[in-house]
Length: 541
Image (tube, rainbow, N blue to C red):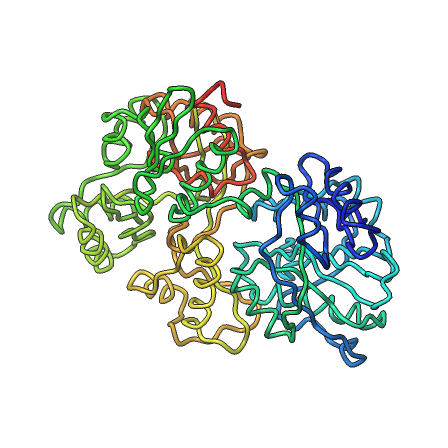
């Protein structure tokens, strides 16, 4: 048995009997995930404890290792792979695990084993920023448990869903192939869920093939989705699913009303609450009106003493041009819009202003022209009139490789964002994208030199390819107070407030929008879903 920091790997052939293996699985610690690997007769193991264990719905893939593999090098530009070396690396890996809802590492266990011959913890860094963007664990079966077959295995491959660098997962896998080939190991195995087509495609590309083999796990809350039917909630988007999963974990019953719309009902001891993602019956009609119309939002927040940008409703071209001259630069947006649609940022001339107004008008309703305020885009989540999470949102960005056109880089980055968010985040290629590129002297056909980073949108909205980076711990008290004041002014118990700030650690700000249905899933590892369910069912915690 090998303690990997998130649970134990149990090498099934080393156990004298199925009964002994089951007894070991029963000793799984709370919050951990143990895996019995290479179970030769799973029916005998399950027969010992059918109510406690289940057969993992994963495939085992294997790549034979040869001497020439020792020279294999990670080939992705901009990615550097190395063994874990600091306690900060462990924290960085756990940040990635939290984003992917994986079991976190026990820092004490991992730190004690950082020089182990049996376990190799890897991190992948973005060479441009130094940020940890991926990780994997390699297990040397010979060093760990004297495997006569001379094998090794790969576990917990994880990549930051927001990285702009491609090939991170492949680089980590190639590193382990070379690492174990140099040690003379005969093969590298891995376990992958049967429906993870993206990962299976990567492994097949690198020469892995499926081999017979079974894994058995314990029926616990971590593994619940693997052994219970999820048909009822499978159609929900990530924002609704996060809340539903937290409710089910507490024993709160869930009834999906309209999966496509994210509408569901929660019921606990006779108390019911109807939700559409994070929007609930606790949000009143007036609060909805204040949030949905951006003119009313800023008027209300200004009346509460909060700092907001100057704003006007788009009218005749002359009036619009006069407002632009007064401000120098403006933002144009549909007053009732959402998810970043129809927004143009940092508009500086009358021709672009007219185009932006027309684009926003296509979204329906009246159009708002707003003073452009420079700064970082800060989203603060307030639940129960208390700040729960804060994150900086950054516009979609691509990084050149010296070969690909801007259009190709956008397509790849958009595909990565879509895969990481269940299709919620994609980079549009439209007139606004072309305007942003033109402002940097680029077109969709331009080829960027390797390592050059280019913003392709001005708005940082997740739905238009933006990324989100947690800053809850760094949030200045003045920003926290402003967010809670805004929630009270709008009389809304769950809200996402958009600020523009020079830094989340400084007190200066303007508030630009309020979202009555914020995406709580965007703020992990902060406990947004937990605080949301606490608000609805305070005695279920």
